[in-house]
Length: 254
Image (cartoon, rainbow, N blue to C red):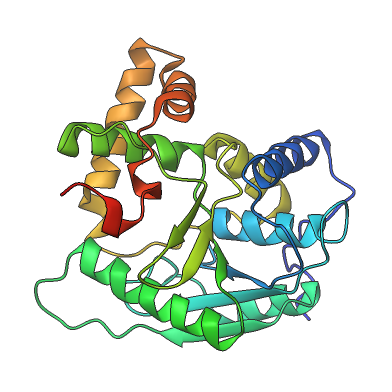
């Protein structure tokens, strides 16, 4: 095995303890883990999904059920993990004794856009999870991602709606959980740097000019004027969000 393989496991430094505390807060407040049902990690290979994998591996069986844990990587030319080698992720999962699975998303040439690409990759992920006997899938979305979603929904749809930390997707029969929702990206970056797994993995030419990237830039500009902008947006989103996404599609007013 590669001796330089990055592994983040307890005992933690102060930063690791802070991340685990916020991670557990999200798990308990939103009842993300209620029994020993298997959980699938959507593993792109970037800093966020690897932090998610390391923390889930660290907390299972420690005040939480000893749930089965799987990692699924969706590869492809335009996937967020296109810059990660198969061996790199396989070796990490092997060291953690987490079963690793990989599926390839085949995207056509031509007019490609983020929504259709994301939808195809998620469908493949959901199908793979069900093959493994799991209907609960963990994503590595953090607090900054939630704020970007809130701002995009507000400006595009006049809805005050961040990412839901836990949501059941009726159309697919799966539940998505986002245990990193209380953790800022800046802390994840420092955690990844400390344990040696901070890498640039996204090589998608479309994603670099996406609405989410533009919103990220807008939030950074806002923080130059209002230093607590991100913190306050997240607090407001938690307290006052519309929760429209939690309403079953058949009961929504359309």
